[in-house]
Image (cartoon, rainbow, N blue to C red; front, side, top):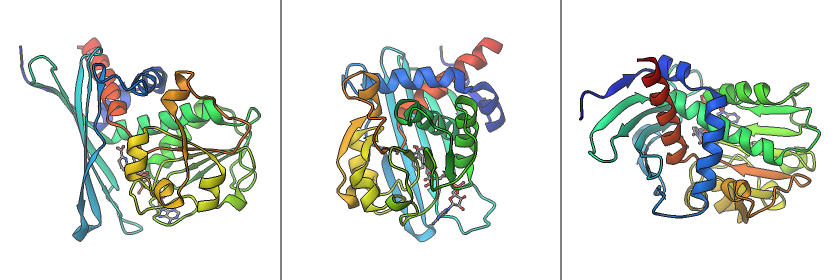
Length: 283
Ligand SMILES: NC(=O)C1=CN([C@@H]2O[C@H](COP(=O)(O)OP(=O)(O)OC[C@H]3O[C@@H](n4cnc5c(N)ncnc54)[C@H](O)[C@@H]3O)[C@@H](O)[C@H]2O)C=CC1
Ligand SMILES: O=C(O)C1=NCCCC1
């Protein structure tokens, strides 16, 4: 029944996880999450342990998806690194468990999962909220998340050039703790996928932008507990991505929209299950 867990390194996880497989699973699980049926999905808000002495954090992100038979947790550290540091600022490991027996079935690298699932969720937000004619993409940041966002956005959509002023879609994927994107730079109707600033006192977007835009989030509970951009600006959350996917709230494409991403355990859980399924199909 139990056997040894499958061990998968970053290279294998990257190879096994494709955006084509991932995007429909993420859409489906986020829509389901937004129905708040605890007999279907249990996903508490991430527990975060500050490691003040070293400017870091440890996050634990469990999730149980009953119908899919997925029991999972990610452990993720994120550090504010000095410019030029060779260490990744986000590092993670994902564990899958057998929901019936409780044994660990797989232990896999979580960096590739975090990079791909976060970018894929932002791409889902762009599909829903970007202006009908979107030609200019701007990505602020040049780290792991910036790279995965560049990969999936240029795979799914056709953009001509990169810039801030005049951009139709802007991704902020930085380690900033103060605003780096200001309302006055943003073209009316643009869509912003805001991926960084995942602490209650960190910012990427300024107050005016947050208050004037229509704000979507991945999880209302996560956003109101962890997002400095939401808490400190006093901006109202209009809807979860899943509530739009469910048809309960509209996608206000014609307005300036912000998708504030914090990351969710269920996103890691469906990603890890996909990786394990792919691996099993090859062995
Ligand atoms: N929403 C989500 O699900 C997730 C969010 N994150 C967050 O996304 C952000 C980016 O993560 P990674 O790409 O892994 O980090 P990284 O360290 O690889 O890249 C960070 C980038 O931000 C830039 N940067 C730092 N401070 C800046 C500032 N004040 N102004 C402009 N640029 C600045 C750095 O030069 C670097 O290019 C982090 O805040 C991280 O915590 C990470 C994983 C998942
Ligand atoms: O969802 C995640 O994974 C993370 N979110 C914000 C901080 C780094 C990891």
